[in-house]
Length: 259
Image 1 (cartoon, rainbow, N blue to C red):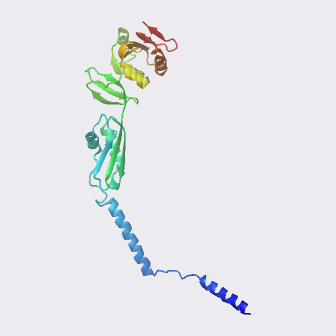
Image 2: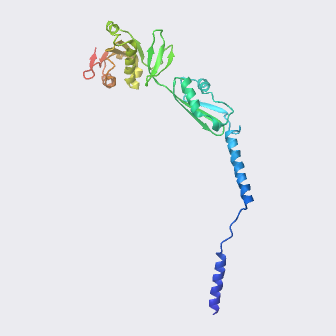
Image 3: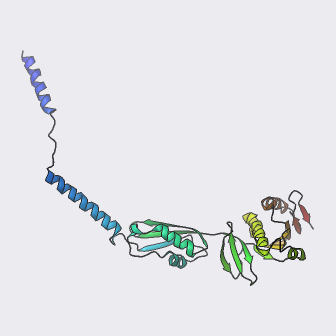
């Protein structure tokens, strides 16, 4: 009998230990106060980030500028200093840089707390420098965009120039100068980087008579027309392994060396 009573007492104690604790209940007034505090904190955070000078724009750095200067990029970007960092319209800054600086192929603007803005620019790479009648050189990239005019061609960029023969002049109605220049730029665009650096000039005598003038003792490449330029570039790469004064790839299926 004593054992039975002891078991009952143990169960009673266990039940007492497992009894659920009363839940904390907030009054309506407590809920209102808590909600007000949350709203104040949220409003303060929004004000600090979006409207105050705590996280304002203080520094603007430029990455990727080569031919361009940092000042040129900053002037084009027109990033307002002192304004809230999170309210900066990065897309508008990118658009301003790309519009004001034709040399820029792409601009990317990022922000980092608490005060920094970074403008990363990717400049266009010229594949040809088109010589004008006034002696200046207009740079053109792989997309056919003309983005700068300089008094001299940059090193390693083939110069496109017209030196029309009698046949070329007679064909101007069919192949005007702009077509001839576009064909020569297409030739320059097809050249691998190493070969482009070796090419001093792409000389146009007529649509079907384009020559490459190579630097050094390699001589002249007789290219023919701009057609099949990619294939001609591959064939020329193989021919240049042999010494010759001239290389003829005008018919890429039947290339020849000229002595």
